[in-house]
Amino acid sequence: MKLSRVLILVPLISCAAHAGYVDYRHEYYDDGRNYDRVYMSHRFETGFGVAVEAISRSDDAQADKPYNNLETNGTEYTASYQFIWNQLIWQPGFVVETDENQAIYKPYIRVQYNINDSWWTAFRYRYEYTRRNAEGRDDRSVQRPEAWLGYNVENWMFEVNGIYKFAEEENLYNNTKRDYEYNFRVAYKFGQWVPFVEVGNVSSGYNTATTDDRQTRYRTGIGYNF
Image 1 (cartoon, rainbow, N blue to C red):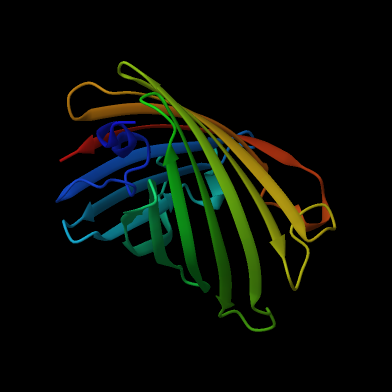
Image 2 (cartoon, rainbow, N blue to C red):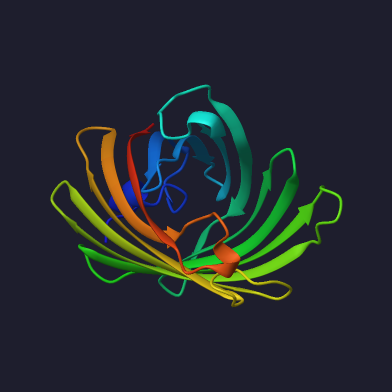
């Protein structure tokens, strides 16, 4: 597969020198919650890459109204290194996510294989350690393997992503230490611009540890390669 196509779908998996990417996306859940994310990344010709993502949300009083009294919902910082070995694109990295109540440390290893000019697949294993600041709340460890399958035809790009999570200390979903989610994405490239839409299925985020409630998550956004 041509690496320029891979860049559009997974901006951190670019082997091009001095590759930059920025995107904005709006996120909506069945229960009415609204989130907004701005993401920017850059990879140097040495293979080293950095990224930052800022997350905001509509306040809890009127969470069902987009862009209403926006509040910060955390910031995520990523550092990674990328190289090709045995026809695979390898990327070890480290992510730190912070908000007012906690910090989450996320070391990971990701590997991608380009099957041909249209199909690609990838796998990532990430370990998440949450350091909580609130009194009476214990820290948490979660292991998170996930996989992607992508297909590109002309300027269209299709991608499906599945994630499985299992915790060590506490329940995640429906009174078990397990959880899962999956996501489908469609993007279209024109020039350096990439508008996209996504539909996913995730646990609800409210009383998730003790209920089987799930939500449909909708995302729409636009990216720019530079």
